[in-house]
Amino acid sequence: MNERSFAATVREHSGHPLTGLTIDTVQVNVGLRCNLACRHCHVESSPKRHEEMDWPTMQAVLSAAAAAKAHSIDITGGAPEMHPHFRAFVEAGVSQALQVIVRTNLTIMLQDGYEDMPTWLAERGVQLVASLPCYLPTNVDRQRGRHVYRDSIEVIKRLNAAGYGRDPGKPLDLVYNPGGPSLPPPQAALENDYRAALRDEFGIEFRRLYTITNVPIGRFLADLADEGRDAEYLTALRNAFNADTLSGLMCRHQLHVGWDGRIYDCDFNFAVGLPAKVDAPHISEFQSDSFLNRQIAVAQHCFACTAGSGSSCGGSIVD
Ligand code: SF4
Ligand code: SF4
Image: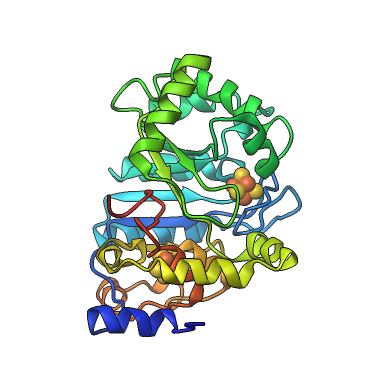
């Protein structure tokens, strides 16, 4: 079996290790608490998790975004809406002229205290990226829990009513990930299928569909190992390596900040506790130039980002 490391594979194709190219986006994990506990969750969020970013660290994140001249701040969790300073953080990002992106599981917006979220977010022009791993209910509920599909559709209807997915200034993008250890189908074709199915069945609209490959870490990897399929999946990802994805890897165009303020190359590295190779590891000490010049920390899970059409928080990397 070919067990060449990801670092060796990159060097073989590009002649040098992975480094940063730009800092377009500052992605920030504000905490691990979530109202759901999905099987595939790579940060192992659940209602029992209480780790969260403090306000001074959130302010440091915004200062770093300004120093890096990033155009977007991408807020994730957990369910980021559950963070006590979520609204203040979004307001601060908007007032700093950042494009604020929120990764939402949708269902949180049906809970007490969050029902006004669709309108509140729409009024601030926040871009939403929402998980909906299939347009069929069985697949969604199997991955995310009972009634999650029904609740997600209800929230998309409310978001559409607030202008999301219909008004160009209120983008709503959906995220697909495969139900098991396989590569996603081509993004454009699947987007057409989603649009037709969701429009016909529910009259709901969205802007774009992002296909994201399951990364072999966390609960997903543990489940594969239980089934004895972990090595098979890693081999499939390695065999599907596509060098054309290297320039678009998200770690080369963003910085990721964990809830404790530590700097990472991406949320997968955050999830496995693999920090960025920088001299100043906390966001309060962020140095834009040294971050850009760093060598990106890589491991075998990186093969998920370079397989086939590639995968990132913004979907496939190449057509
Ligand atoms: S909704 Fe997202 S953060 Fe929450 S458990 Fe599911 S995958 Fe994890
Ligand atoms: S897992 Fe992270 S560091 Fe590895 S290739 Fe993907 S984005 Fe880059």
